[in-house]
Every structure is written in structure tokens, then in C-alpha cells.
Length: 122
Image (tube, rainbow, N blue to C red; front, side, top):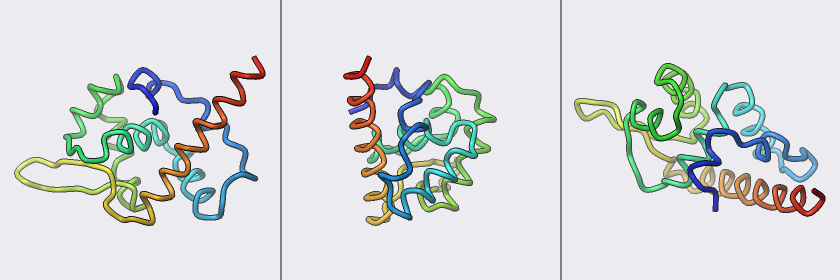
């Protein structure tokens, strides 16, 4: 399982070999790669799957600018990877969609496997 320190820079998720991904995983990975902090946000939200937080709170925990997080979250929502709850303030969390959760879980598992392979080589 990833630790919060890994969220600031996660080259392993960015470098996953495309051949190991199915079509839905490749699509999600491609969209995340276009965002400045897409991988970081997805990994964080996955790790905190039962937590709702403001964009400001997420930015604080990830040591990212609030603007950067606020720009990426709507795209993750469009992809079905996040949920949004407006209750006087806007809260964000990991998707409740079982298929999207499965896709993200697989990406995170592959990321961990890829990191293990790279570390064995080094």
C-alpha cells in the first residue's frame, strides 16, 4: 500500500507498461497522464476511499496547490473516478462505482508490482 510520502511523486504509476493494461485501464491512465496531478490524486483518493474532503484539504495533504487540485478534480469526476457532494461546501471522494473502483484498484496493484520489479533490478 502506498504511503502519503509517495503521493508527491509517483513515477511508477506513470511508467506502467501499456501491454499490462486492459482497454479501460489504458483509457484511465491516458486521461490521468494529461492532468498535472492526475496520478497523485487518483492514488490518494483510492488510499482514502471512504473519506470525503475539500479540494483545499486534499491539496494540503498532498502538498499541492489548491488551484492544481481544483482543476483536476472535475476531470476525475467526468471519468467517474471521483464523487462530489455539495453540502454548503464541496466535498470530494473516491468513486462508489464498482467497475471504476476495480479499474483503479488494478492500476494501483500494477503500480506496486512495477515498483517491485524496478527495485529488484536496481
